[in-house]
Length: 326
Image (cartoon, rainbow, N blue to C red):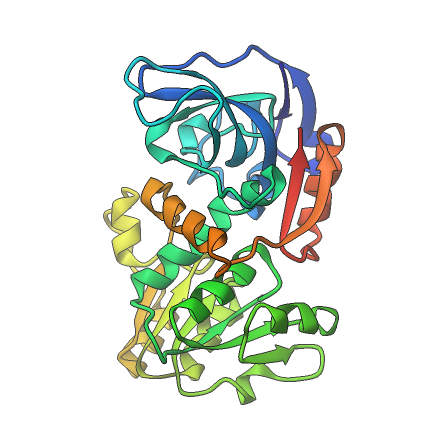
């Protein structure tokens, strides 16, 4: 079968190759999925560029991709909740990474049936972004009437998070560029901040939560925006001590500047490292089927152009998800 593989660390175009590899075998709890579509995510090109070497060790060459939708074509002896022919979607575990391929074997415990009203391309874009948003916002206890700033509202995670926060009854601020203002408003954001013409720091104030999808200075600036006792939930900032411990970093301590900001505001800070979750995939399925959340797809590339798809995603200009169709 054919697969998009990372053959070395470095520049995307030089480090990816479409290769012929063996079809995966399945274990007793696995299903074999014929891939119809796979979504690319920032983690994919960050892996290629070598930014996550110490956190996600890889044996090269390896097939890339974590998001998938497709059809069950075989199942292990212990699988009882799926049948041959079921249309499914998943964010696969790290050890089963490799969804930009014709087939992928997946632990059935992290797979759900895809939303019935979504195409394979739409469904493939939901798992990683949706699970990231849900886990990040649930970890800080997002609730009705919370005032939240969601950075980068036109991106994959941001566009899902806006819709999820509105479903929870929150008041949503978000940032985006001029060309994406109308799109983000249509997702339900209450106050769209055009960062090309406005300074979000003068508009979004006294917040309950900041959802940081950008990192660096944005992580630190979040503490100027929250009220005393507010919460900062990040997916790209420094590790928090609980997450670090979970990842085996027993002697980890928060950076001093971040610790100072947390103490000054009596704030909560979390870095969420998303985990596959079947129950939450089923929740996403319900939200999509009842119209609460709409999948946002920017571009769909044929499999033979999957390297170009990765290059496009790495520009940071994607509005929603970038999909590879098989």
